[in-house]
Length: 436
Ligand SMILES: [Zn+2]
Image 1 (cartoon, protein in one colour):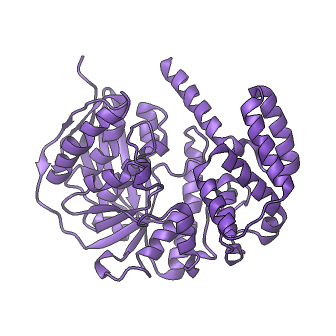
Image 2 (cartoon, helix red, strand yellow; image 1 turned 90 degrees about the horizontal axis):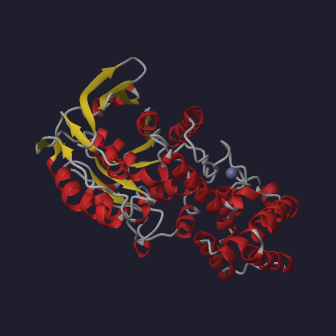
């Protein structure tokens, strides 16, 4: 039987009073969906409606994973076509442990460039990655052609709230809160922010079921940038890992192969790069402490619209700052009272993570020890028994004891300590659900 096809049948451009929109009329077998992207009216002039680059980049990895072809009545840029079909897809087929299927992209090619304003962009969430990139490509950059001109914030899946399921209301709510905060930051410091709202994740969920954003984020974000080729000549994406961790699979986070992937998603008009040189997470923190714009605006929390100081990301960031003795600079975003009262707990939490072999905490730990951080006997003993429990106890009993002891003594949500385990469990549940 022939493979199913996701078809881009029509691109429709609308200029409304409140927003400018570009909509893709899609069909997949009997299913018909309209995928839309909206920006403020003044940015409507940058939306690209003569080519299907955005559509192809957004969907080809998903198509390989779910085994369907792509068809477009609009052409794809010649360079992008070449790179995807000869460089990227063939490798993803052999590196993805059977998950990446060979697919076809049926579309004409276009070699004429569109006009381009030479804009330089990066995503802004007010997190560590965003501030590291903003600092690097404003204050640390002496080449005007590479300095940032625009910041972006996209609603294409990042606001999933770590729930492991698709929840459109939660996602929209988180997006609206985040984009309002980022807009306030940009207004204060005079940055141009291009916020893109979209129903992309709703459309994908309707047609294909749950999609793990962490496996597709680079494709979805780059696909969205390619809607604005008349604006962006360069776009930076902050990396999570360096090439020493290179690993390439459609089962996992593209961050592990992004340095190879990003240049191959560039077109004649827009080039993509990783920012932040070879900085690790801790290196990025060391950079942004020199950037006062981050002091009152750093926001890393995954649970709340202000930093809760208790979730995994808050704890990791506070510990990272503690390790270099710079927590005081961020007293307005991480409540100093909570930080002071939970310092010992946080250290114990870090030791447990190190015992578990967690990479970013091990990095923070090494930095902290280098800078003279000490640990109480109680913390060390706790971490030792934690490791012992991890090895020896039957799972159920282990969870019970952990739950009790963590809640009583560490005051952190025990579930956070098992995020790896819960991610695996959710993956298994999804696989099971997929079989029926
Ligand atoms: Zn938090």
